[in-house]
Amino acid sequence: MMIRCSMGTAKVLGLKKLKVDALPTTAYLMVGERCRFNCAFCTQARESSARADLLSRVSWPKFEDEEVLQGLAYADSQTVLQRICFQVVQDKAALEETKEWVKSVQTQTHLPICVSAGPRTLEEVKELLDLGVDHISIALDAATPEIYAQSKDGSWEERFALLSESVKKFPGHMATHLIVGLGESEEEMVTCLQSMYDLGITVALFAFTPVKGTRMEGRKQPEMSLYRRVQVAHDLIRHGLARTEQFGFQDGKLIHFGLDVNELQVKRGGEPFQTSGCSGCNRPYYNETPGKELYNYPRTLTPEEIEQAWAHVEETGSKESDETKRGGEGV
Image (cartoon, rainbow, N blue to C red; front, side):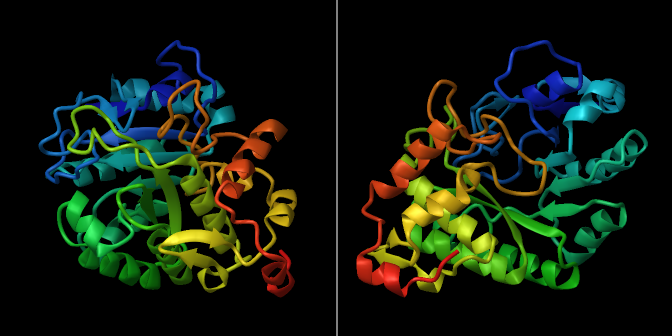
């Protein structure tokens, strides 16, 4: 039996020799080939002509199961890895195959396991959790039903309903992915983020990434200033430091957080700009181009990177007026 690993994971498991700027702190394993769905941004989509070994911009070479299992037990990998994440391509057999992989991995390591998949029912969610899976991610990707209909197959409402039902029945175990830059407004994305955290759903935030061979290959990545604003809003929401109702929007654009940006920079530092999602997940270069400013930092930011990131936030005039600052609460 074969399985794909992200290139960085293969490095950590001792399966590939290569130089990397940052090691993944999660072992990313991909189960399945070519999805039955046809998401416009995805390299694994039904009609994608992208390379079969790509997911976003990351290469995922194939390895024998024994190589991967031995790599997970490898002493060096144990010092780096904090989690194992299965990326499940939605073909007919992948979910059942993932269950077998979960069992096999558990013979080699006690690391927490998450599964990013498309379970269709509460029963399928329960089956994965009963195997000892820590988190299950049901990716919405799009912030609104309208954007979902433009970029994905199926129904946003049905997927959201399953997420909502699952988190009520299995609190603390559900997650989702949201992609900034599919055509939504900043207000729509931030409102969606708030609704996810109000339900107790963990969110992994991504920047849209164009890849040749996908239907959205010609679309640009979101402007860095836009993504930084959403990251700060996400950080405030997930830590309970502010709510969407405190933010200010103009024509869908986030113009202030109801809090002083200078104070936020001092108190939050670089944390808003690091990779979000399950604990121990850093996804190096998933959305990035080497040599350019990173959308999601897979590590602690340097002081210079913190200044640069907050400078993008301030580009939009999101420093509040004196009246807003006096009315805002401290962090």
